[in-house]
Image (cartoon, rainbow, N blue to C red):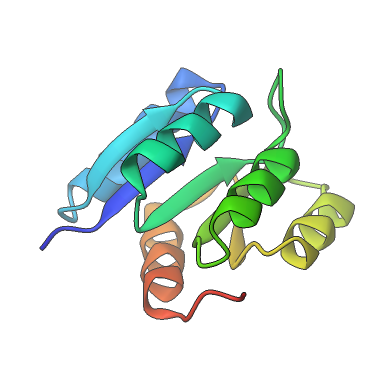
Length: 124
């Protein structure tokens, strides 16, 4: 059975890039445009993994991560961040993120990290 991944980023181009990389590997992709949208779609879909951009309007990825994890402590969340956001990465990991990807990224790194997160046991 195909794994479902919710790709969350306010930039349509980034969603498209991640979607293209993951659909080629057989993953089923759903998209959300901000943190609030991510929470709603997560509760509706219960995807196997969420890729969540840290910096978004309306609700940050870290706030969305905390909200998703509060509703489902078994949620698998992979943070996506721009270079130089180490402090935010640490905060995300402390809030329950499983791993992170730094933009710009290579398709092989995206696939590697997604597979690693899907195989790992979520931190409660």
